[in-house]
Amino acid sequence: MRRAGLFITAVMLSAILTSASIQFVYILTNGGPSDRTMIFPVLSYNLALGGAQRLGMGATVSLFFFPVLVVFIIFLTRRMLREKGE
Amino acid sequence: MTPSMTTSRRALQTIPGQWGKSKKVTLSMTSSRRMLKGLGNVVLVLMLLWTAIPFYWMIATSLKHDKEIYGYEATLIPQQPTLDNYATVFRETPYLLFMRNSIVVAVSSTVLSMIIACLGAYAIARLNFPGRAFLARSLVFTYLVPTSLLFIPMFALMSALRLTDSLHGLTIAYPGFDVPFCTWLLMGYFKSVPVELEEAALVDGCNRVTALVRVVLPLALPALVVVTFFSFTHAWNEFLYAHVFTSTNSARTVTTGLANFMSQDVFFWGPLMASTIMSALPPVVMFLVLQRWVVQGLTLGGVKG
Image 1 (cartoon, chains in turn red, green):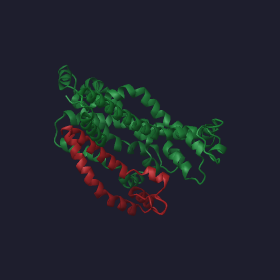
Image 2 (cartoon, chains in turn brown, blue):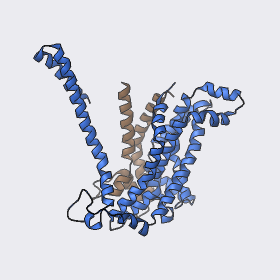
Image 3 (cartoon, helix red, strand yellow):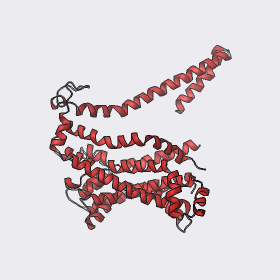
Image 4 (cartoon, chains in turn orange, green):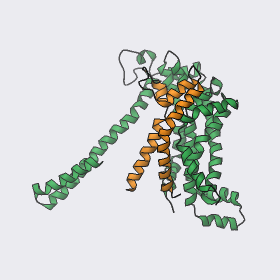
């Protein structure tokens, strides 16, 4: 039971960190060919700082992605606090 | 794990019918367990190769001549090993500048996060003040919000403060994600240090700060080492902020300096691999030196009194 809990924590932590990891995609494919490997963080980077410099649009893309993550984050925060006995 | 467990259990159930004698059953149990262990070893070897082959390829490529790298046949072992690529890195790129920038940023942001994290963790672990639980909660929350969501507002902030393209900007930005994790880890560790020791120190005339510095921190040395190592490697490996906040070589760290090699039209793989290997060295050396305490620290930090 305790081990199952650890697995869930590890998987969720990894899911959050991986879904938002930008450098591998940015360096390897940069979202190409024709957006087949595009992910939210790279898209927001390209909009905000690549060429057109549309900071607002980039921030908006990030914000769209945030609600998906925030569910995970809230859930995981509770778990980690419970494990720590806070 | 589970599928193989069930097959071994099924094997145990069928075998008594076949052999009839209990002695054979125990024998077959050990053999099936041995098989399971062998299977585990095979998986481990595969995973080891999965991790190690890219490193090997990196080292091999850095030692090859251009002709061999771009040649028709891929070679596993460099035919005529050469250090030319390493020489090229130093001759034609500002590699030492990148290295210096990385070291400055990593060391100073580590020191900064350590100071903040120690004080913060001690306060949350020991002192009783309103908003303590909220602070602990927000620490975890901040740690979990990924930087790739934060870099645009951070960039806007840094531009407004005129801290872009400087090492100061990076040094200030990195503790933003090191501090929550470090504080979180230290908090658990500080709690495992007996309160009585501190009370004794307080009776003997320490105040809170001297008690922290003289009693708690020496006892928490393993955790401090882990946390130092974590923030150092993090600052060393960090790519996104370093890429976004810098625009000239004067402030580029190793990671972004290398990526800049890639963004040009010609990939020069040999020097790129050579510089990658050299930039991987400082954390490796640091890990080898600190390893003893790191392992101890990881186990000790998890134990609660």
